[in-house]
Amino acid sequence: MMSARDGKVVVITGASSGIGEATARLLASQGAHIVIGARRLERLEALASDIRAEGGSVAYQQLDVTDLDQMKAIVLMAQKRFGRLDVVVNNAGVMPLSPLEALKIDEWNRMIDVNIRGVLHGIAAGLPIMREQGFGQFVNVASIGAYEVSPTAAVYCATKYAVRAITEGLRQEAGSNIRATLVSPGVTESELADSITDEGARQLMKDYRRIALPASAIARSIAYAIEQPEGVDVNELIIRPASQL
Ligand code: NDP
Picture 1 (tube, protein in one colour):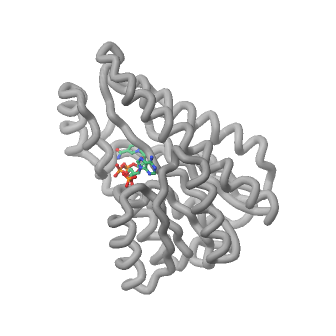
Picture 2 (cartoon, rainbow, N blue to C red):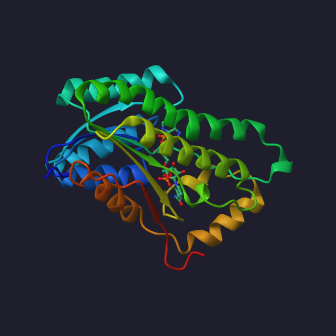
């Protein structure tokens, strides 16, 4: 049985903090080869040295997922370095929440660019390699916001609905040897809310954060989807704090 412990090569976007970082640590501790990308290089360096100190196998490269060439470059680096590409975890995301009427158009565009285009770039970079080698898996990190909309979160939820639609389309088209998994967290400890500039939205998130799950809880669900035997495709996982409505 293939499992995350069997030396799978896993590229993780947005691995400099939160869920991506926790996933990198967990999968590395289970024996996977981890390739981490994000914009903050110093964070990646520190994480890689932690993982190596624990005996894990890791490579890193600066990555802005809105740039297709950078996404292709990190995936190619993973394949060259470790000889294959088992999984791309499209995890990078931003969440500057605000009411629509605040017209924070730059923030809308940033969410569309990172949360939707970033995931598409991950697929565009990984799919040709997976097709050629005849196996692979995408784990796309969406949100409970992929299933329901709440005030101040219209655009964020729209991007996550899009990730859900893209992942389901990918599942249908990719064929039986390429798996597509959607992981949708509820409120989770991370740096995600730090970029909220709207005071009302920031206050709302502060209250929510009191019940947040540790990022390791989401990492475990990603590991679960990855370690399933060939032919078993975990399509959707929703993980939320038991006290979150
Ligand atoms: P963090 O803010 O801690 O992590 C987000 C990561 O995305 C960072 O590593 C950041 O790194 C990276 N990132 C942002 N923009 C880019 C970019 N342009 N290119 C590459 N990397 C980028 O938040 P989370 O860990 O919570 O977020 C991970 C995912 O989980 C996101 O998709 C988020 O929407 C989703 N999620 C989180 C929930 C929560 O409550 N925390 C709930 C539901 C979903 P850097 O700045 O270094 O580039």
